[in-house]
Length: 236
Image (cartoon, helix red, strand yellow):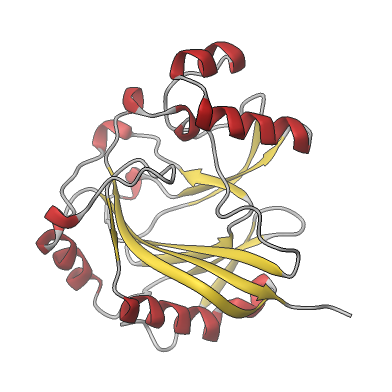
């Protein structure tokens, strides 16, 4: 399933955090695109996260292979000790800018609220050849922790109109800095590239050309995503 001899590249996000990049990740990436095409009717838009399109949960065997790859090549770089739980999915971004909900107008974090002895990691494997469909952007808050938490909370509870009026934001994919977040970097998309990063850092899909999004897995922004909750390495 995965390249047995990957080369890991490190891209700095800020002074303390990095993104870990592996090209030529899947041994046969075209098979995964065809798999997505065959099961396209099973993709569903989930209501519990901010992803702007339909998703398909992967079988446990597939997730296990991703976790093994993560364990062998990445886990130690992110300060993780042991995977406690994880899952993977295929996803395809399809939402038009004007249809996005407020929580999709801003960057986000994955699985907040884990205990101090745990950490979260995430991965994205790009399964599209049109690199203009966008990689992944990373951000840091400009506000205090309290103000940032309130902004995130409001993005999930206020109406589009109320959120826009309160924060002076409008519908659309976040690709640049604003008064609430500073953009730190973008990791570009590349066919069959996988990236791993600390899921507690603010990030989002860097969709700069939403008019090019498509529901067709052969031409759209198809990704294979992983989410890991791990015990944290205890440093003396």
